[in-house]
Image (cartoon, rainbow, N blue to C red; front, side):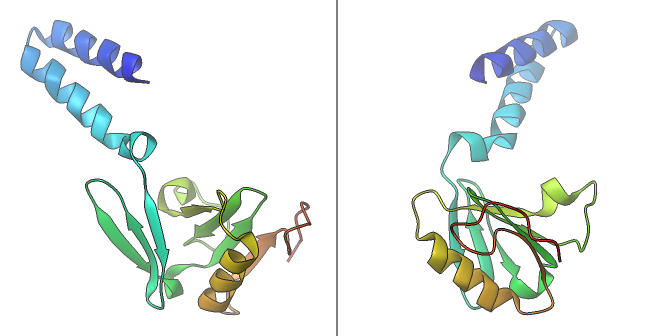
Length: 132
């Protein structure tokens, strides 16, 4: 990935005949992918889901989520009731990643309330999608 950023930034610098734009392009591309290069920390609190990255921190209240997708790897908390074009950019992906899957699912279920549509496995052993 870093090689691709360097190639694009070099191309931009050559195309514009300016090393400034090449360096600027490399910085923008690198920072736009900060979640890929640096750890992202999630905290589930009474207020909502807190997402802390290297350069930013945000809190999304529980009442903004309308749909939860569960799979073997984790949960996707979506702000939309149905599938939308912007969903991948607005949703929060919580990976189980060695954490207590049952406790994470129970915490999210209790926090989002009954109005949220829940799709996917209903327990840790189920891998099929539940409709409804």
